[in-house]
Amino acid sequence: MEVTSNRRKHFTQEKRESIINEHYSMGISLPVLARKYGVHAMSLYYWKRQMKDKKDESRISPEFIRKLIEENDQLKNENKNLKAKIGDLAIKNDILKDGMEIVQKKAALKALQQPKKSKRLIGMK
Image (cartoon, rainbow, N blue to C red):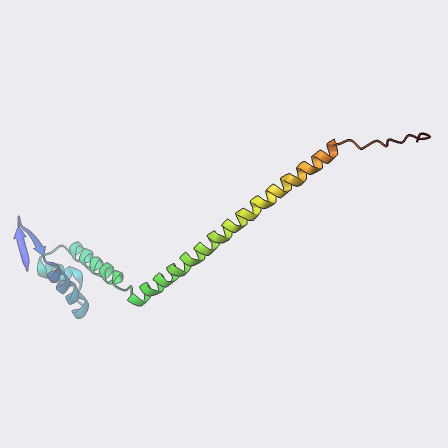
């Protein structure tokens, strides 16, 4: 159904779809249909593009969505496991750093300590 106000025609979505379907089913060019229905040809091209975009959006199957959800769940689990491994490695790294500090401090203390002199001097008992 068309509604006219101020010399401008407004078509319902169903009417737009029927005009575009006429283009597809009968092979009538859009400029010819534009003259037939009193609409600018660019409006028909726009409607055609809208219908194509609408069909492209609906091509996502439930199976595809299910696979995406499964893959997302697998990636979440893998991410969780990797974060746990990173935490373990960080703890081990801290332990090794603490151990290195202890070893370095002991080595520094040992270097600072002077060698013990023998109490026995040559010829003295």
